[in-house]
Length: 135
Image (cartoon, rainbow, N blue to C red; front, side):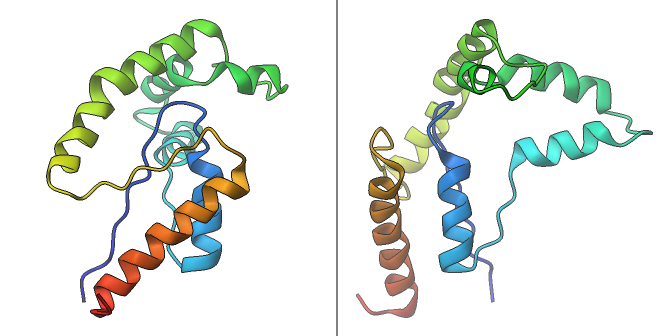
């Protein structure tokens, strides 16, 4: 049996982590956050890549996290601008590629968290129905 892998992508501050928590709770997926994995490696005392990761993470955090008092070293306007540029120049072309293969489902994440999740649930139910052959 092949594992089902879903990539939740979006711009900085889009609520990816919030929605992923709900997906885990309701659909039984395992959530692997690239940011969390990088921070874990960075915090290992003997990490070969710790300093490189710290510099990278410092470049891609969202300004709103700084405003909420997160106390993180990487929350500032320059970082937000760099993250937006990274998303537009590196992530969005990947999304566009997979969208051309009809493998992307878009959800408007500018709404309330619960409203967004209603659409997320519909997508996951559709995927599960298709995998079972219900469609």
